[in-house]
Structures are given as C-alpha cells and as structure tokens.
Amino acid sequence: MKRIVGEDNVLTDPISRMEYSKDMAEYEGYPSSIVKPASEGEVIRVVRLADRTKSPIVARGAGSSLTGAAVLEGGIVLDMRRMNRVIKVDATNWYVQVQPGISLDDLNIELRRHGFFFPPDPASSYICTVGGAIAEGSGGLRCVKYGTMKDWVISARVVLANGEVARFGEPLPKNRAGYDLLHLLVGSEGTLGIITEAHLRIIPLPATTPRRLLLALESWDSVGKVITMLRRSAIVPGLLEFLDRQHAQAINAKLGHNLEESEATLIIDIDEPDLNEAVGIFKACGAKEIRIAKDEEEADNLYQIRAMALLAVKSLAPASQVEDVTVPLDRLEEFLVTARLARSQPQRHLRKFAGMR
Image (cartoon, rainbow, N blue to C red; front, side):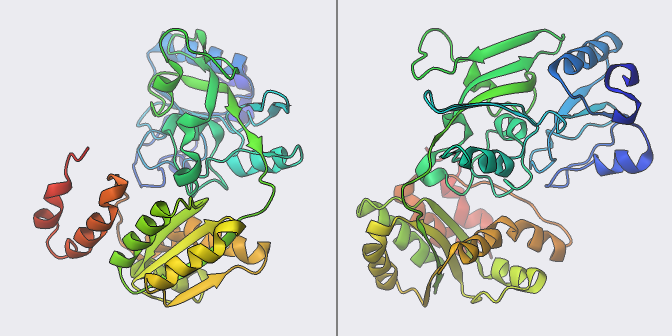
C-alpha cells in the first residue's frame, strides 16, 4: 500500500487508528491501517490488493455519519479526502463534476463563484464530504423544499469490490432507459462500491435571499400547527428545524448562546414575499418570540445553532442515540403530541406509529 499511495499516506500507528475508530454516533471499529489515495487509479490498486489478500476495506469521508458505515474492525479504512477537486462546473447543463472528498460547504463556496448552489444540506455540511453524503443518502436542513441527495445525484463513477470501475447514470436532463442502478448506490452506505467521482445537479442562486427566523413556541403541539398551517397556505420553507428545551439548554451551556429555553424552538427560512403571511401564522400559533435575522451574519449564527446541536448534547450526555423519525405530514402534529407524551411511557404511546405508511 505504501508503494501505491506513498509512505506518508499509510497510517498504522495507534493514535491514527483511534482517530478513525468512531463515527459521529460512536459506532466503533479499530482498523488495521488507514490509506489515503489521491486518485481513482490508486483506489483501484488498493482495492485489488485488498481483494487478493481478502482484507476488509471501507471508504470514509469526514466520519460524520451516524450508521457505522465508516468504521471497520481490523481492516483497511480508505480516507478519500485527498480526492477533493471540483473538476467542472457546467453552467449550461447545470451540473458539477466533482471528486468525493470535497466538503459540501467548500463545494458551495466554489459554486457561488459561478452563480450556482447545491441545495442538499446535512447538519454536518461544514465537514461532510460529497462521497459520504451520496453513500449515506443524506437529507439535511433544506430537504423540505429541495429534497435529499438522491434527488440531486445524476451520475457516479464507482470502484467495485474486485477493482473494476463502473459508471452509473449520465449527466443528462433525461435518462430513462434501463434499471436505475444509480439510485441503488445512493444510500447504500458503501456496501456496493467506492465512489470516486460524481455529477451533481445544481441550480442558480436564488434571486433574493430568504429571511431566516427563530421562533420560540410554548409546546410541541404548536410546532405541528405551524407546519400544517404553512403547507395549507402553500408556503414552502427553505429550511425548517425543530429544537426542544433540552437542546436549547445544551446549546446555551456549551456554545455560549442565549436562546429562549422554551418548550419548542423553530429555525425557519421564508421567502420575502411570504414573510408577512408566515409571521401571521406564527402569531396565530402562539409564538412567544419571533426573531428575524437582521443580516447574513445573524442568519448564519442561527444556522450554526442547529448544525452544532448534536455536538452540544453529546458533550453533556454520558451517552446519546440518534434516530430519524419519518411520518406522513398530515399526521405530524399528532405525532409530536404523542412523542411528548411518550417521554414517560414510550412503548405505550409510540406503538401506533410503528410501520406507518
């Protein structure tokens, strides 16, 4: 492996193995070695070597995933972050061709120079890599309006387990023939191959910047009412995130903020033409505080509150468990009421939502 990627790019010391032994959800596995390829050719050679020697191998980006997919006991962890180039921004066909190791925030910094942006926005976007986001099928803070990674990946090059290279999808607006193997890859958590390049759909930057608001609400029930009333009014938030009292307390304690420690907090983006109507809805739902960010710096500070919430909670809690909850939108209000009651008796109150379609 040292002959393939260079001596400095193979790590086997205990400190490095410890550094790569966990993901954000604290799944654990101590690798035998960490390899840092700089090209698809090096990935191919390392994978073929692993295949010949029957060595387990897994790709890793920033390790911000929550599924255990980036950790491996006793095998090779392939750190893809040296492969971090933006190869091409196509302003006519509206795609970007990119290597897997670039973070989503750095990608958007480059796209902004061309007047475009890539909407999927996981909370860990400041470190989360393109390859990791594809492998995890990441969602994010903007998914209400823009969808998740599976809606934006149009092509990917992948090194398979035997070292062969395959390409799935095409950077075309219409590509409907045959099986959709590309979207079998998105969300496969690295089990089907190692992503070495991707074409991602991009869109022009909005003509106007949405207004970012922070709402302090009296109850979880009010959160459901806000979301229901916005949808019935055909107002689509660009971003909508919910924090409970415990999150607010953790953020204040560990990050130095002075959030109102109300029962429920919403961070929400609203387009300017819808702002007055949306504020009326928030007031009708009993918002105790409606703070509208006065400038880009304050808007970014509100965003960082949500992005860092998990780290704040983890720093205070002896253990934590992260889950995604998915229910039909027309039952969201009911679910929030039930979830509040379930704090004391989870088995009794949450059973009726199991397996909901």
